[in-house]
Every structure is written in C-alpha cells, then in structure tokens.
Amino acid sequence: MHPALLGVITIIVGVGGCVGYFYGSNLFLDKVLFPAKGPNAGRNINRANIIRPWLFLMPALLALGLYLAYPVVATLILSFQERGAGGVRTFVGFENYTKMFAEPKFGEAMRNNVLWLVVVPAASTALGLLVAQLTDRLKWGSIAKSIIFMPMAISFVGAAVIFKLVYEARPEDVAQIGILNHLFLLFGGDEPQQWLTIPFWNNFFLMIVLIWIQTGFAMVILSAALRGIPEETIEAAIVDGANPFQIFFKIKIPQIMGTIVVVWTTITIATLKVFDIVFAMTNGQWETQVLANYMYDKLFRANDWGMGSAAAMIIMLLVTPILVWNVYNARQEMK
Image (cartoon, rainbow, N blue to C red; front, side):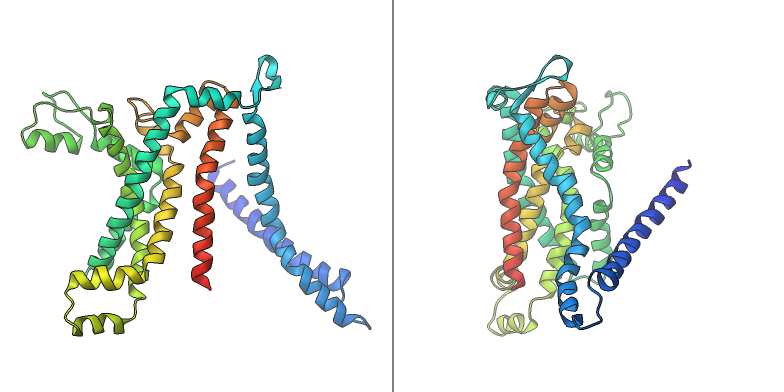
C-alpha cells in the first residue's frame, strides 16, 4: 500500500474510532445503562454524570497503562535478571547495577550528563529570555522570533546532521564545506580540526545543537510571560528613575520567575534523555557517552538486557523528581 494512502486510512480510522467510541459510550450510558426517564430519572442522570468522565479518560488510561506503566514494571524486573542462552532469564539481584556502576563508560556517561545538565538548560533559558526581551523592542521582532523558533520544527537527528556538516573537516588542500573549519582557517588556523574528536570540548559542540533547538521553545514561553507583566509596574519604575537594566533584572525577572523555573525544568528533562544528537554525531565515541546512548549500546548492541534495563531505570529515577516538581509548580501557579 502506498504510504500516503496508508496515512489517510490511519487518520480516518483513528479519528473515526475516537468519535465512534465517545458517541457510542455516551449513547450506551444515557439510553441503556442509566436512562433519563421513569421514576429514577434524577438518580440515573447523577450516576451517568459520575461515570461519564471516566469513559472519556478510559482510552488515555489504557494507553498510559499499556505504553508507560507496563514497560516501567517490565524494565524494572529485567534490571534484576540476566538473560542467558536460549533466552532463559535468571534472577541476579543488584548484580547488573553493581557491574554497571563499576564500568568506566557508565562513569563517563554520568559525568557528561551532569555537564549537559549544567550547560544546556542554563544557556537555552538565558538565550531564550534575552531574545524574548530584545525582539519585543523591534518592529521586525515577530520575523526574528519565527526564525529562532524554526529549529523546533526540526527533528534532533535532522539538527545533528546539519551541525555535523557545520563541523565537517576536509584535507587542508581541499575547499572546506564545514563552516567552522572555514572560519578557523580564515582567521589564521593552521589546519582543519576534527572538532567532534577533541575530548571534553566535543561535548560542548554537541550541546550547541540542543541549545539551538531549545532556545526557540524558551523564547516563546518567556515572551508570553513578559507580555503578561502589568504595564503599571514598569511605568512606576521608570517614574522612579530606574534604567532599562534595573527594570529588566529587578522588575521583570522577579515577576516571571515561576515561568523561568518551568522552562528550565522542562529543558532539564529533555537534556537528561538526550540520545539522538549523540547517537547521530559521535555514537558516544571520543568521551561523549551519555546515559541514553549507553542504555542503547547495552540493550541493542551488547544484547545485555539486564544492564540496559538498569541504565533505563537510572534515567527514570533521575527524571522523575524533576518531573514531579515541575508538575507541582505548574499546579501551584494555576491556583
């Protein structure tokens, strides 16, 4: 079947199935299970209204159970097992975790993830806030925002391929197609550099890709927050003699601090799970390993389901507290 036709059929069946489910379940609830007629009509209406939200939530709950809760439980069980010949699994307790923590590659992945967590959320949020503030003062600010937001429409793998070309190195006697090496030679560099193979610094070259993508996200959210600041507070500060820097740092930022924290934590979660960029650009070589790529190597290359599952559980444990805190802050702001 042609992919386009398959896509159309999928949309029709998916949307039609959702409409059919909600219409049919409401019809069954109101006409068969609790009909709004007879001496018990009032009680039936109340019962139907109690059950109706659960009918709407049921597909989402089933999907979460099937695609989230079950995989988490299954991965946890696998992390305590070892897969032997013939697919036979044996319980080994915390042995997979012990071996994993003893591996140098896991230590490298943890160090790199910490480095990513320090740099990427801070840089993305700061740049997004700066762009949001500056573009609001320009006539063509909406065009600038559109251009800066555009990388959000590109997949991580696509962005990695773009930046791999930016960092590309050709022999010195050949024209450079990599922008970075071209500029490096233009400003007096000796020879083209293999930027992605330079230990420690190559991590920053990889981080630039995620910062480039996430800055647009931070800019959009923070721009909306800045527009929501009451004009009276800014006008009062101007009357009191505050300069633009004082207005920005002492008036605006304190009022949108909650939004800044939400943006920061959201980017932090994305950073903890980073995989595509590292996989497409270095595959964890030259000391660029991260936890998600380490997990992939163990699961699908080494076929070590135990250690791969243990790595997955470590990632989940690191993400969960940040996610819970983010949801809690979002609910507090809604009160």
